[in-house]
Amino acid sequence: MRPSLLLPLLCVGWALLGVAASAAWLPALAWWATGGVLLSVALLDGWRLRRYALPEVLRELPDALPVGVAREVVLVLDNGPRALRVDVHDVHPSDWVASGLPRTLHLVAEASTRVSYTLRPTSRGDAHFDGVHLRLHSPWRLWRRACVVGAPQRVRVYPNFAPLAKLAMLGSEQASRTVGAHLRRRRGEGTDFHQMRDYRVGDSLRQIDWKATARVRRLISREYQDERNQQVVLLIDTGLRMLARDGELTHFDHVLDAALVVSYLALREGDAVGLLASGGERRWVAPQRGAGALDVLLRASYDVQPQPVATDYLAAATELSLRQRRRSLVMLVTNLRDEDIDDLLVAVRMLQQRHHVVVASLREEALDAVLDDDVQNLRAALRAAATARYLQQRSRTHDALRAQRVSVLDVTCAQLPGALVERYLAIKREGLL
Image: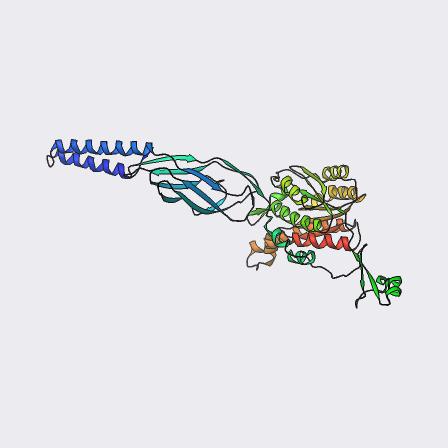
């Protein structure tokens, strides 16, 4: 219970009356009577506020949210037998972006009131709502009563899985193009037999089944599909480099979003997908296939956070070699520097003994922006020269990996999903697994 602004103002007014009474402009008895009335009114107003039953509050919010996507939150206030004037503010995580609160409401007696606001999560992991903060006003507006009502609520914030809902409505090839993959059209030349069909213009002669052609007396082609039942393992860096940011999200958040996209498409292709997070925080999910595999990946990785430690590529390769015995497509996503090349080459050679390795090296968008800016002074020239030298050293690191027959992707966070999907589909269609 605290006094509102009105009560101190009334006390100031009563004090001014006291000055007038001391100057004999007002009878002293009138001043004392005014004070008694003011005290009685204040006590009665506070007593009535203390007797008010607190509204019951229910928060309508899913148990899982995607990071970076604004969602509507609804608060339902069930009021008791007295009408109330309340200020409402939800006790959401402090770093989230909210709009529409606080808000002042007039609650009708014995009725429910719904109020909504917009909330956008800015970080993954477990988030906690500690309740709803209410500030009740007394009938005569002399007092305010603050309280926290409603049960605490835990919400899991996942990587942004919203794009997957759009991909679910598209075919595999259309979905791949949607995320930015540039596919080479190829028809009926996979490695697994799919079906027999009539010959089409453009089919190669080796696709023609001559026995079936002789039997039905028209050209019949064999159609093949990409081999299924293969395995993909996403090896994700959780070290210091992944703390870099492009926009509001860290590189690691962008990597998880891209990993979800390529995992979803690989699962649709009939392959098994696994994940190893290594460098800082560690997490392992063995390759799985089927509709539930994506949910397993989400639950296993949503709360993983990058740590300010150096990544040990050799330790990550050793762990993966011990855990994953079957030949797989290993996609290592990190941010390479020239000082990493010695350790990374040893790690890649170890993985290549059994697996096909792809390295995706993230490039900060700010680097491209520096080179695109006009150079108008010495400081800008030095910045551009330093950036160009850094990118040149980075390119030499990539060339050293390519010399070991490693597929290297030099991409920004925005380009990462399409590049991973494009390389995954190309490897499958070339039969490299």
